[in-house]
Length: 510
Image (cartoon, rainbow, N blue to C red; front, side):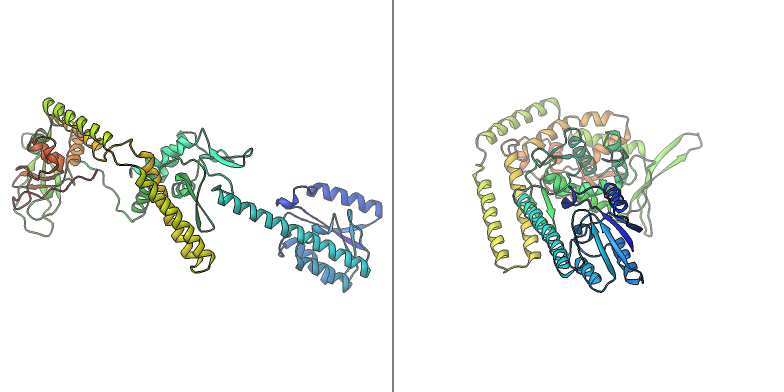
């Protein structure tokens, strides 16, 4: 009689103490020599037997069913053949029908008798009970980890699995790099391909093959909420106990940038002129383009004009030099001299001290967080009572957790920033003081950058520059006194709309 040798070992938890496949095959061949057994074919498989569907095992069974000869199976133990009721029942059925004449095991004795088949059935049942019990224990352990806010898996880049405490901690050599990638992408100036090169320059490579991280992997990292303190497991969000690397505000900004960059875009044309695509025509609203011309004297000059696309427009061209002179005058109007700068800073210092003394209590934020926690408990009760669906529960829970994180970040920043407008306003004072430098510089790109910083909706009409200044810049142009500027809406005569009516200036968004 011939025997089929079958050896199996999976990477699952229950197979950790089982001999390797190589050791099983060696032991089985040695047993076959002692017992004078003829091995017709070997079947080696690295797959779990929790569920039916093992291809090599099914191939062995098919050969036995099609064979007209007496065939037996040689294996290490019955649990190598089956850990589920279907495969175990199939083995016993083939023994009943005579397709399997004999079963030989190194660690289990089997006789083809009613008692032997009964004991084999018990062995298969014990194997199934073991794997089912182990699976339930693992699931219970995962549920407990989720309750504690611990991610039940491999830590993402920037974190490490602490095998001593079975928790996830920040990777001291990688977490700063991850934060730099988020900050770089949040600017909206860099692509994912650039981030791949940036990560490589920082020494951030794949964990196993020491190669550059794939672009898709970087995109997955940027979308992973784990980095701001939460994680999603099987569609449900959980508050993590790990230390966040970034704030939720930064994460949300990255998602907005990624969404905007995902929209179809036209190929960018490199600007050959500093102020091209900066102005619109004050008469017809078409864009203002730029050209270079060579005069008879041989001198080359640059001028800006309306494209006049599909419209009749009477606006004339404006040379670059007069345009730059008008922009310089605008810079001088919004600039703060030393006296005004010092006065503004003194008044700012007074308001900053008042804000530190009279800042609102953080108790309101604590109460809001407590209300959200109570709401989350009521939501869980409603889910357990089956008054809401699992999908509704997951969505509502995610919304509550994100709201809690927003409030906690406000708590963390509370008292550190004072009133929201104070720090940006101080930056504006110092920036306005530098407007003189922008007027004096010969770098036209720097002038354009500063121009876009102080206003918007730039127009050319009758060879004059018109614009909409942001409120603090408009107030500095009229030389108002601080802190009266907060309520002023006077308009700079040099910045009007196409009908020469002063713009209604919006409050700057700090």
